[in-house]
Image (cartoon, rainbow, N blue to C red):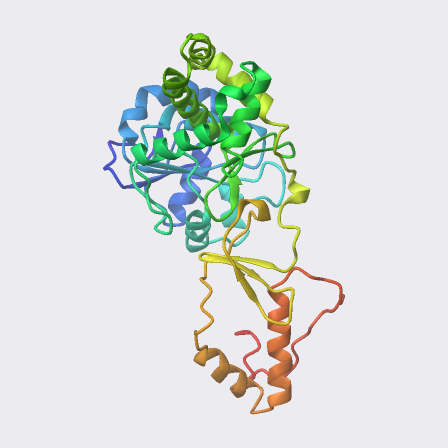
Length: 358
């Protein structure tokens, strides 16, 4: 292991890039707790051995923008999932193939920008010991089981075929608002209550498959007097059969990258989604069916008074109300993804008019 390798304390953030060069560049940019075992093959031989040193930490994998980087990420997740408190995967530089964290810094990136990227990146492991998203309360495991068992009862799970196809359909129906397959990414995506995010290697979907198999066994005990249904669902305790179930669930409810974020007038916020298509904004609850994968860090508050913004506009427009309203209209248009107007706005004025602030 190369870099700041030691026995870490729970709660410490640890950066794992690929290669010694990347560790040195991170150090040069004031990053701490940076460590690497090298390539994917290196991590395979060392990762399990040293996993205990990362217990309870917040892991940030700084993935290279190539296939080798993806392979290394899978190996790290495999060895540290369930050991680290949280795992995040960040690809700092996507400008070209094989770009890495060193390229990110050499192209003008800063440690602060990297940390902002990390904060906006969701954790990929479900069973974290430390809750990172204050916007989503932790649901106790017992309560999750009750919700799952109620869904099974509502769907009358015993009426589904006891085959890979039938179990796949059941999984899709039970978890359609949480797990859906994306053929563009060749993996499942997970709905976190606000947006669809990557479920790397289907880790979360596999965990839900386990939970479903356990719940079905408990359910079968109460609905099956002959024992046939219990025998059929007990087969899902085998990982091969669960994998078959997941495989057959993929084409039931799915979406591609092209179907994500297609509504130009939806602005996804932390406390809901704003529909900007009408004369007045309409505030909507988050919904997985909106197929949104992007989100702003702000919350919607219609009663908020943007005094600094108004003061700034009056100052740079020197009290010209008509121009102020027009500039506000431009700012509002920029919140949407609509490009029908095919317009490019150029800010023109003297060097003292604070264009750079806007």
